[in-house]
Amino acid sequence: MKHGSIKAVCLVVLVCMTVLSAYGDEQTVDLTSVVLESFNGDTVHEWNDGRHPRRFEFSWALNASRFATKVKDSDGNETNFPISTYVDAWPIALFGYNRGGADIKSFGIRGRFDRKGYNWIDVYPVNIDGDRWEIPMPGRLRYMDLWVWGSNLDYYMEAYLRDYQGIVHCIFLGNLAYTGWKNLRATIPNHIRQTKRIQPTLAPMQFVKFRIWTQPQENVSNFYIYLKQFKVVTDTFESLFDGDELADPDRIPELWADTGNSAAY
Image 1 (spheres, rainbow, N blue to C red):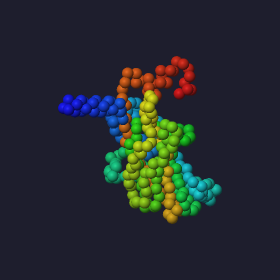
Image 2: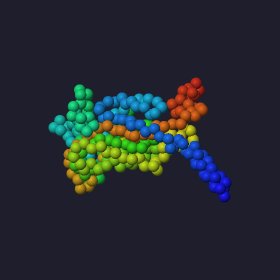
Image 3: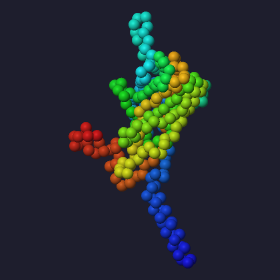
Image 4: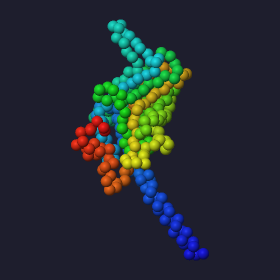
């Protein structure tokens, strides 16, 4: 009986070691905080995805639902709302009262609609040609946060992410019914797939846009919202193996460059 118990315990330990070995990549994490956009007016953005430094050029544009206001001045020039600018303002909780000579700005949005309802404003990235573009997200996202200034209007905000299968997921960031700056933070749901079975296993998402919604009972005649520092907390751990460079998406075009079929990538 005693020998049988020892054998049973050894068998359980062996099975546990096998399971942990098989799923080691998923249990090992290397959490990194990455600022994707400071909203300081810069068009060049750089960060590290855990294996490679990244450099992108993009800016931000606005779009709105059908009842967005259009105004003509005395000269016949038309202003289409919403409009945006960069202002000399920032969250004190983030940068303090004294910015120490640094040129700190925030992205300002001025909105106006002709009628109440479920109106929306989209804030989305565009490339250097002004075309819609999606930001490649580093690693496996765990959290995302954004500093937002609100004026106690009953609005709310969402973020849209596209997974490797092309499915767009809506992430609720929070309600804007507060006064002043607040850090809105959201957890990325576990059901969103960010890995694949085949190599490369990492299947990062892309950021599509922010969307601001107005509630039907709330005033929409003239309002201001400001954004600062879009940041993610992400797991950048990748297991190394013999030949891992052959599964590196950045290396594949280089390895096959002599074929002359660069358009395939």
